[in-house]
Image 1 (cartoon, rainbow, N blue to C red):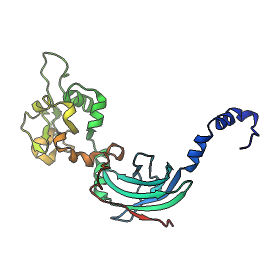
Image 2: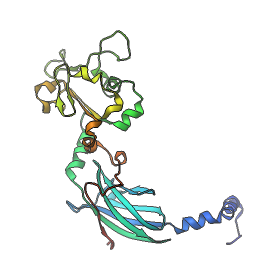
Image 3: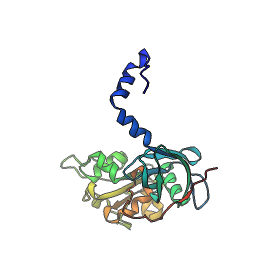
Image 4: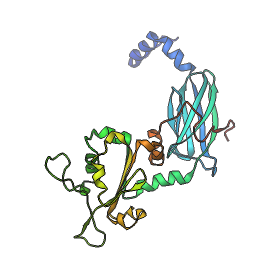
Length: 268
């Protein structure tokens, strides 16, 4: 190791001399680089999360390009997580100091990603269990207040006051109608919002709120005042289309619903 340190880098040199083992370990790590494409259409995919089991992670960028660094030598499982929790796996073996170029073809349904993108663009709002937990809200109505303040007529934490959930009618600006409530796929009656008060935030997998007639018509005319759609954790798998890749749980104990990704070692 050279001892010719410049004056401005003496501290860095001292640190390097003090921990030679750390540099040696870092030098042994491998790197994967290449791109990811969808098997259904052959298109390169952006915003796919690559995760090494118990290791580093990275995202695909423009044109599906990725670079996954700091991979310990050996055989590893790698998960590819696309929007809507579309998860596929592969197994890769890397050698010390190796930089390997690999392309991967993963199972990918564009309709699922489009559904998620459409909900981002719509006037509706979706919160997942993780986001609800981060709110530290005592009741689900408190969550609703934060999502759509105009829907709640009085604050749920004000004792002695009735809680009213309402939305402005699409046919009369002075009219007020009650939004429809869908709980675990079942459309509740006109007083469905009463059930919302009895649901613990910890029991909710996701909740979607659509104001006015922006999306409630799919449950009939009762949805003209908007829609509150709640999925409890009893049907937790149903929340997948609403989740971004970083919100998905990776089932490392199985191959997942889509099996293994096809590797293409030769990257053009």
